[in-house]
Image 1: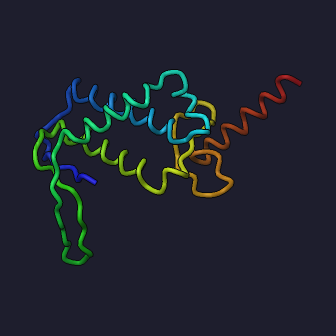
Image 2 (image 1 turned 90 degrees about the vertical axis):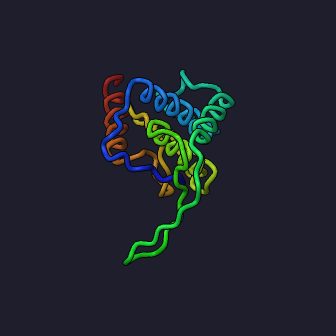
Image 3 (image 1 turned 30 degrees about the vertical axis):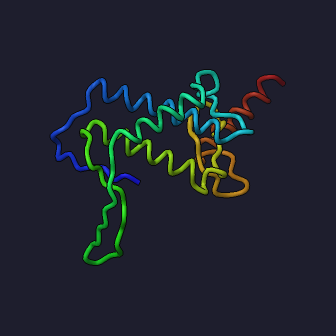
Length: 157
């Protein structure tokens, strides 16, 4: 994965930078929704997903915006770590490229098969299922879903 470049506080995101990250988020959510199939996507996404082909093009374009070179770091008291290091681009380009490459790495990796959409009320998250009985992204979502079912049963009785 691409390692972010420290900006030492010299760069602050503007509206265009925020729009670029939001556009990337829309692409990532469309691809996550595609990855959970045949399951249902997050209810927050169901009606506004961009086409998969558009999402793939956007993700790949953003990931390619910053060239990278391999870099080895070896902390004095640790193990060597290899990662890709930005070899160009602006600080505003690096953040979306890092995020895009992380999405690519996840979707092409082994954890993708355990990806699920949380269907708790008001939840918009996707999560990696870590236990066979896991249905929600976190315990509070499970509580919210159980409370909603309880209220629905008692309201209609």
